[in-house]
Length: 298
Image 1 (cartoon, rainbow, N blue to C red):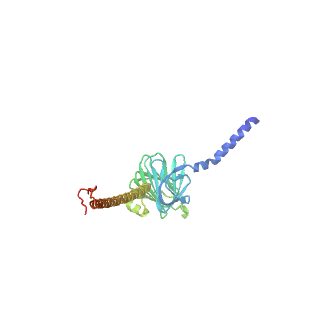
Image 2 (cartoon, one colour; image 1 turned 60 degrees about the vertical axis):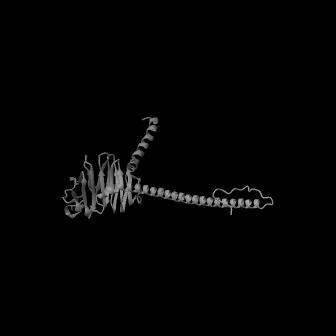
Image 3 (tube, rainbow, N blue to C red; image 1 turned 135 degrees about the vertical axis):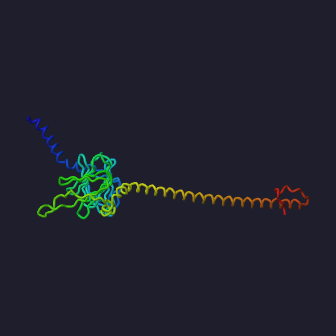
């Protein structure tokens, strides 16, 4: 390689190495979605506000409240009370890494892949199904419930499909020698009574999906109500001002009427006095004053 070509090649190599080194940083900044609504929740230790953009690598903590994150155009994940989770995005899927609490997912289509992982366990909506489900950590076990559609649970080389209305409870499996297993046994029993299972999982339950998605709408409605109250208050003030102005106008009209009556009485008295004076002259003359109709001089 000539010296001239080497001088051109070296900067390109440095640039390529720099881009490769910075690739994780770019991947970590991939957009997950945005916050649709929240209450008593934080992201990265900061209060979580509606419309906040969520990135890969962000962590969400919910206290006694709820947080709703919109993913793609139609998918939603709802974090219930006392929940901790983080996000990861690759070229295909958005993954929620649940470490505490419960998360509900609403996944109507396959536009964006969505899954929840708890340790070695992976839970994802089956392709082609409109899915509504919940994953909860309860007393060391992982409880997976499909309210609508189909959830696929994978781990340790096993797969379980959880159909609509079914619940799977995944419990840790001890490895040989009594040591704790690195993963969990997926070959779990499927409970036929989902109502009791869900009630024992969390006070939020799967209904948090609908209530959480509606949280932002409720906030918008509250804002609109406050604006309506302000408008109504302004209208009441304007009406009160109009009533005051009308009362003032009536008072002014009454004052004007009284003044006109007094002026007429004064003018009549003056005319009558002129009439009396004209009759008392040495040579009486006809009075130039004629009382208005309906009135007479004393």
